[in-house]
Length: 469
Ligand SMILES: [Zn+2]
Image (cartoon, rainbow, N blue to C red; front, top):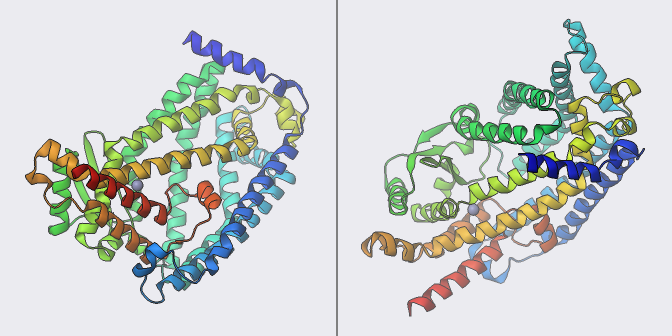
């Protein structure tokens, strides 16, 4: 532990300028957040002309029914226009909030609010909770018209929206309530650790964050998700047998197999698994079941089980812990830095002794450009995992043969082909874009494009057949 603290102290020595130099941090945040937004707009402008192409890539030509390609292009075009507008709009709102002192005002407002309830400024944690909720609540309001438009105009126009205004409003209220019920105690403990551990907070906070995430892994599907969707056991039949068979052959600890009513809100489709290492649950969207044949859904699940087999979720978790660790390791320099608060317009009496939550919020804004780069790297990792999971599906036959015997592997030889067909039909039904600019895709997509995946599947299939000869 002392070694760790020694290293962390080293980092702080390098960053000590933050506590002394009067840097214009607000200007820096403005410049960088606009740079990120303008870069994202530039990517959309690169992608936009591709929506005017009149034919799909040659490899996909036969998969589109007449009119389907035109539909997907029109959907893509509308989405891109909307994304361009909402990106610039959100940035303009955030930038004005920052420029005109919304953050210092919110801190004061939180102070007055708890004062009215009979608590003074010595109740810093209480004021911090009030502060975060004022920020969260007020800053979601300007984006509400956007999500309304996105759901009831854009998705509606292209036939995806299944949400009613009533569901829209209750979802919103529910998510605010959940944010409060889980967020308030989380924040209280988070800040308590700073108070208690002082500048040696890093390992304690990490331990707390990891336990919180593990608790959420259990609570999310059992407590939170059922508030929004209905999970019901998948009915008996071909599909259930196929998936249970797959799980047994791979020794996947399948506990429950659910169908989720994703179609209540949207007709986009998917499948996923979750749970603890010894007890897993698989959830399949009813839309996927309706849109694809059982043998294709099985192939999608084979891909998902590939993620499990290669421990992708665990690896992602480790990467994200390292990410959080780095952020926390850099934070102390900003924790006791009056010049940072002053540059954002906080009055001297607040800046003199920076409240942890305020310092943390400003610190995160300062990290925007770094976070943009991190997200590109994370996408690259996630794409690699997608290819690995595809490979798993293609090579499943061989794997099952080796572990469970020749007979068990029967009929699995075309898993790759089935996966390809499932991906195509998911894409076509969801009107996903088939023409994608590489830079746009590298920045935004955690999944390779359809064309890339089909090409990958084909190469794997060829390699597999060569091996068998
Ligand atoms: Zn995947």
